[in-house]
Every structure is written in structure tokens, then in C-alpha cells.
Length: 244
Ligand SMILES: [Mn+2]
Image (tube, rainbow, N blue to C red; front, side, top):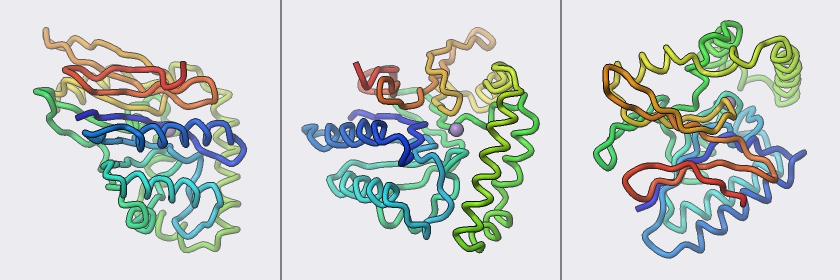
């Protein structure tokens, strides 16, 4: 069985070329002979998601394609990212996708694996973590989803402008994961392989803790010319280029 991991596609109507790359990817999955792969989407599939009741043509198109994928027998999992954490029950039941809690830990091929979107490790960005705490609160989400669509779009655009401005002020290091935090989480949960996205810094890091080696695999974000995904076929998961 093959497990495939992707994240940070940031699908948006202003980037049709990335939607095209995703559509080709789905077609390739559908064309694969058995055994069927499993697909793990580790957050930020969409650039924004303001509720399952918001009808955006791109969102509907992708929802239909994911539904086809699941109906073709390809088990698909989704974890919320910081852009699409409002994906809800409606989307899940329409597509047949299974929601993963963050973090998700499981054993596979004798490895203990942790999946995360990754933003939880970026603790040096204190301002972002404070914002995350607010918007990940169920009460906040419930009242946000109760606003009319126009109001939700307004809040989204304000938040996006503020985020672009504050990111310009922050150093690159602040927006990456905090390595001691990663090491602490890996040690506490006895993890062999951590897979996450969010930082858009695809890489395979080796982490030594008390003579035990763990691996942190970081997924890439998608563009028309680059998309680093993880394929796990044999003993170890590997970062591969989807686009050559
Ligand atoms: Mn993200």
C-alpha cells in the first residue's frame, strides 16, 4: 500500500495553474492500478474557507473531485490547516473524507508516526500563536459561522491584510518551527517520523535525541512549477517532486 501526503496547495481562483496541477494529480491517482493509495491532506488545501455554506465555484469543483476520488476507493484524510480550519461536517459528508485530529499519531511499518499541519510548532511567533488560540476556539468559530457571508468575507480580508503586514516585519526564523519545541514533542510521544507542512520549507531533517534518531519531513507548498509531496511505499517515507 502507498501512502501519499500533501499540504499547502492554497487553492484559490487567482491561481488556476495550481488547481490544474491538483486536477492532474487526482487523475493520476484515479488511473493507478490497485492497490489503491491512501491520501493524507495535511492542511491548507484551500487558501481560505469561511464555512461549508459559502458557495465558491472553485470550492465546489474541488469538492466534486475529492468525492470522485473517495468513491473510486481511495481513502482520503484531511487535517485542518490555518487557512481552512473551518472545513466542517458538510464538506466531509459530501466528499466522504475523514477528518484527522491534530496531531494524529499512528504506527506504520514499525515506525511511530506523527502528522501535524505544523503551525503548532511555530511558537516563536507569539503574535500568531495568540491569534491561533482565538480562532481555534469553538465559541469563536460558532459566532463567526453565524455571521452572514459578506461579513465573514470582510473579516477574512481584514485578517489577511493584517497578516501580510505583520509577516513582512518578522524574520524568517520566527516563522519557522522552534526546534526545541519539535524535539520536546517528538521525545514526549516517542515519535520516529514527524510529517508536517505549513512552513513551505520542504526538507528531511534528522533529529538526534539521546542517541535515538528521528526524522522530521516537511512538505512543500504548491505552485505551477513546484510541489514537494511525500510518498511512502517502502520502509521509509520520501519527499518527492510531483512536478519534474
Ligand atoms: Mn499553513
